[in-house]
Amino acid sequence: MKFRTFFSLSLVVIVLALLVSCSSIQNPSKSKTANNNASIKILCTTGMIRDLVKTIAEEHAEVSTLIKEDLDPHTYELVKGDDEKLISADLVFYNGLGLEHSPNIFRHLKEHPLSFSLGDYICKKAPERILYVNHELDPHIWMDISLWEVGIDLVVNALVELDPKNAVSYQENGERLHSEMKTTHEKIISLLQEIPEENRYLVTCHDAFNYFTRSYLATQSEAKSGTWQKRCKAPEGLSPDSQLSMADIKEVVDHLIKHNIQVIFPESNVNLDSIRKIKDVSKKMGYCLFVAPSALYADSLGRPGEGQDSYLKMLYYNAEIIAKCLKSKEAYES
Image (cartoon, rainbow, N blue to C red; front, top):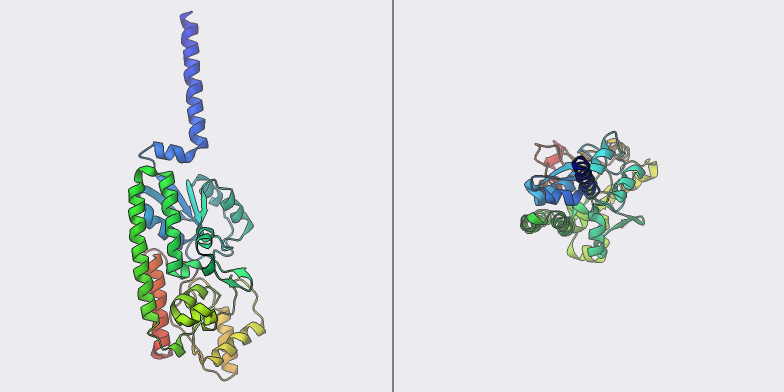
């Protein structure tokens, strides 16, 4: 009788333990908050998002990047181990608006129970500020700091919901980041508006600088009327993987000649084929064209340890390179 009672009690304990274990597995977010020593795992698709999230989360989370600095987020395909990173993450933040458009990665992003698109959130908050290129959403929203800043609240709210015990830290970090972004945004406006208006034209490898141009290079009247587009040109579209035709090249060269633009800017993770073709065609047409000595960062940050390895540093670095080249020919003629 005693043995049967002991056996029954033992069986009940085992069943209860299994139920608690299953509940913890099915609700990973709850298990994280229950254990004060557990670290939240957050996966971000790009370096720009990782920097934003890490600045807010600080030591309360392990924040990693899916798409490394030298890879193209437009065309990235999942590799071995990526699906495990996505599944094991407590939170996933991605850009959206068509940036991560490869079917295998998009499916994982949509199926994760706690995945958040900064682009979708920003589009809902400020739809009038979202750009379209040839009827296609322009996903490069991080190129305008004042627009990217809108996404701070999404990250703060998601972290507070998952980890309420550290809510004050997340909220304070979010407020501080709002202030830092506003300051850097105004500094870039001041720096680039010093360039003579007739020189504020930007030609790059692919269509990544539309938001940047509208916010920092255009005049106020151009930004309001939509005529700022003349200040921004690229041979390749929103994704730098298109096949260029001679008509595409000729269109860019005609734009260069029309606005007397003498310098074009390479990008850090885009090959120079289109730049070389533009320069060759310009030379044949008797037009002198230079390539800026330093590449701009568009779809990625710099490598860890470099001066462009954080979001605000990267944007200000771009502004400095552009200002230097557009203010003086000495910056690129040597």
